[in-house]
Each structure stands twice: as structure tokens, then as C-alpha cells.
Image (tube, rainbow, N blue to C red; front, side):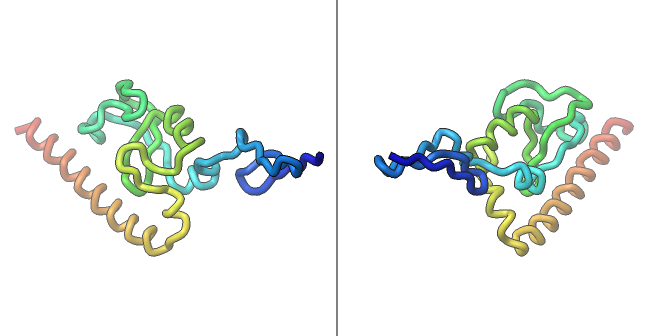
Length: 138
């Protein structure tokens, strides 16, 4: 009987030649640290900027003003950092819209269009904030 240690990418496990079995308890099926870094960003939560998002979709805990939250770049959904990092250990998609962050890494076209869409969303969010200030002062 021979057991081999295998380390390849995010996989870290063993292979038994006699039983032809792989010990898969250490297989990472989620995102790597570099994929998380490319697909997300830390932002400061403010109720003015994220007025329609008051709770973490994973934990259902309220966001606090000036709290650092994790935002998925593509879809702009936000989460409490610890919860989304735990989510990405075994999953590759956004918990809200199911956008696959691994696919973002493979397609430059998607990244270009994502930046355009994100820019449009940012402009719309700024307009909403400005309009709320205008209403407040009128």
C-alpha cells in the first residue's frame, strides 16, 4: 500500500494507490486568495451610500455606519467581511445573484463590460444621493 501526498493549486490531499481513493477533506472548492482579492474590495459602509442595503445577506446582521464591508466588484453586493470570506472557502459565486467570480478571472471582455456597468451604477448611486440631499434641503 502506498499513500502519496498531493499538492496542486488549491488541492492538498492524499492518494491511496491500493484503494484508488483520494482524501478530499482538504480540497478547496472555493476561491483562492488572489481570486478573492481581484473580485472583491473593502469599502466603508454608510447608510447614505448604501441606503437600500441595511443587512448582510449572509448573517442578516445590520451593517453599521463606517463599518468596513466586502463588496463584490462585478455585482456590487456587499457583505460582512468574515461571513463572505467563509462563504468563498467552498463557493465561487455571489450569495445574492449567483454571479461566478471565477469566470471573471478568465474573460477580459467581461472585465471591460463590468467596469462600464460599475461606472454606470456608481453614477446612478451618486445621483440618488444628490437627489436625497436636494429633497432634504428643499
